[in-house]
Length: 380
Length: 217
Ligand SMILES: Nc1ncnc2c1ncn2[C@@H]1O[C@H](COP(=O)(O)OP(=O)(O)OP(=O)(O)O)[C@@H](O)[C@H]1O
Ligand SMILES: [Mg+2]
Image (tube, rainbow over all chains, first blue to last red; front, side):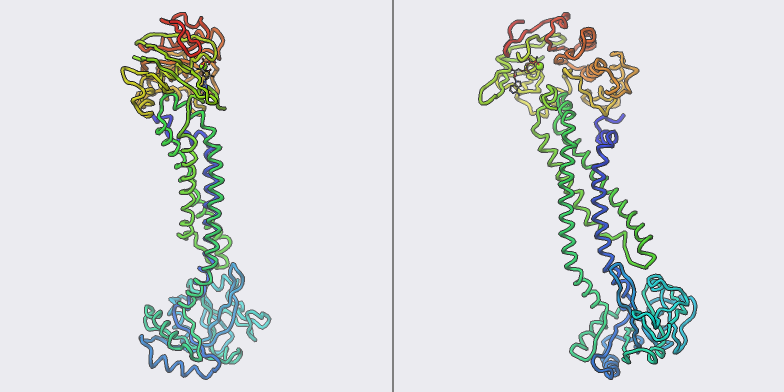
């Protein structure tokens, strides 16, 4: 037979008292992890949307379109790593959507063969439909682009009447690549005949993907001070991190405040809750249960409530964020990670601080406590 | 058994000393039923608390089986009380979220598998066998007090202390409660405070208290 004083007996039989306590913690965890996960979804989206740039180094001439062959020669002659394909391409502007508004994206214009090897480089080997024909206003895009821009096979990704996704002729989607990478390509001949500016860009690939980062850094350093601009993934990383540094410091302050507010609220709640139990504490002490036994019991109760509240908070956050992702994010290919570890790490102080405060409350309330006051009914 | 030697309990009241108990010398022998009588404020409850160790004497000493309370820690004293003493208070304090049976089980010093059986036996002898599963709010005042007695007697206590256990009951119910206490205590002693002498008909000894001092034995 279980002891009537087992901590869970009180909790289970006083659900109307214990659930609000756990409920506050659940809400706190939900709030904090929700904020962090949604915040984190922005850099995650940036990294995912532009992830294709991890597979190559982009180089454009600056101020002088005739620089391209020179740049190409330097790379071919001096590259410290074995080179893979080195493609000439052009870029047409388009716009993708994000939870913080539109982002600039490019439709890469390539030669027929280069389109295929570029897709292969990204691991996108499954194609539905067909490849764009040479010189035609046609495009091949990956699945996330299709979702995000709300397009279908056969609809135009660029068109004359859309100033953000402009092309003089409607550029129709004729093929869809099955991949998580964001990618849009069209024939370079069409671009040359219809788009501005007439600048050839370079797409440089290391032979081995493992060496791409090394190549990125080398090209970046090599072309410093030259009439060239280098697009490398590590720069995107740096810029993203820098951009979010301030935002994250603000986030830390906000969450710190949140933890303080919630803890104060909980302390208040705990205080009321424990005051209702002075009678019980006094009676049990009067019949001979030791103060330490009773303190241990009441601390165990708080620990159970706090820990269960936290775990239920984590579970409900996970459920809530997964739902948000499915309903709001997935249809637009927005990124959100319900399993984001940092978000859950941010919630760790909640149970710890709340338990510490309730332990303190309990201690101050009961460590100097005269049971005679209770059995004589001096306290009400 | 319990022996008080010049035990005093002094309260501080605005810098003045109030003697709730004054130089009490008293022995409680095994199996004895002692009644404590006295007007309100005379120090009856205080004497009970000092004898059972719920309050420590401010001077003089109280010992149980030769063990002086002042020589042991609060934790050890609590353990001693739980093991050897039972308490019945004026108000039938029960924990509202526990059934009658579970409330009785609280009185057992070393909870174990036998606790429940003994608690059931205790309730049976108190005539509450069919109400063991009820919660305190489903019991009458007299029944609640009987549950308290069950809790106080569980585990064969050496001494049962009762502080006006009948004060909240009508005469008939009060008599019944005293009768139960007297006959169910087994070989234990009973120390009972009351202001109603008719409750002490079966007492072996009656001690009268006035202004914190023993007036007559
Ligand atoms: N905490 C305290 N501080 C100061 N004085 C106290 C305190 N507790 C009790 N007293 C005083 O000690 C004296 C004895 O009190 P006690 O409660 O023992 O009386 P009692 O005989 O049990 O009275 P009653 O029959 O009304 O219960 C009283 O004068 C009371 O005012
Ligand atoms: Mg009294």
